Image (cartoon, rainbow over all chains, first blue to last red; front, side, top):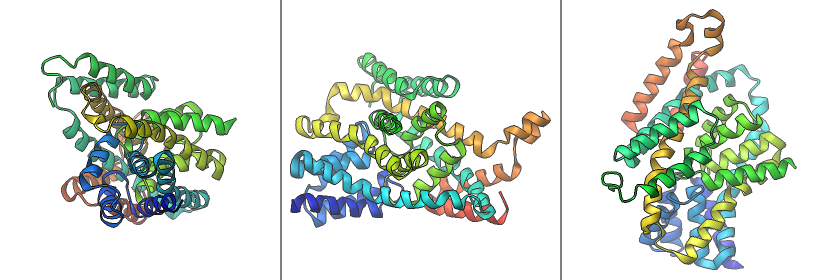
Length: 181
Length: 187
């Protein structure tokens, strides 16, 4: 029980101090999980992070489940995940409660008028970074275009885009030029 | 019943959004087109808040949409929905294949999925662009192409994009800055 509680507390701590998620979390994970607790080695953490990126779900949660499972099995994974998501639940619930009231103020409306614009710029940056990391050949460019066009101009769900692209990846795995990494 | 739908929809998002953070955005767009739980503007505001508050972005947005739909319990249900597939999948992987990401078939599948995820996020970005930078109602009523673009908005966009790409600081900094500029210049 004590160990489950420790898992909860450690991941609660990480969830509280990670802003922006994803890669911002890695240094904190390293300090808490590797240095302070010694639950996994640094290499194991990096492996786990790589797995977390190519499995369904949110990377932070994947990592928490994985490390929790390694420590205490299924319940370890569940407690670590609950620890990870609890700060979000608390903080966002508080913000959401007040947000409706806030939105009535003209000042806040102007602030979000500016903020919505910067969100577009942040997404552009993310797309550029991901493009550089993920698109390395003609197949990648074609799948990017198909995915963009289908989602923008048709009501097709992103779920089908993901399934279709996974099948395409598998079907072309022996095609020269399509699968160099 | 609404709790059940909320759980199932976020379970689906948890299962199919791959690659973290913004990857949930296209699915959230799909969701609000289907159910109209929140407006597109609210989704963008929520994304900005999620990037500026502690915790993983995907969890923050799930809590927010759930809360907006049916209150605090909705936030909890949506969050449980989005993490459940991860718990199931990761438990299986942690148990059976430690080298999951090195399996040839897994690699081949992800060779297809990764570029598609970039396309999905670009599509979501285009939706946000339409809401934030284009004034579609003004264009429709006046039929004047110049009305479609606001120079003030485009100017801020270009400056911010330049700053982000050049200085690579934490997103919160740009969000706070844009908020202040928004207040000062009445965006």
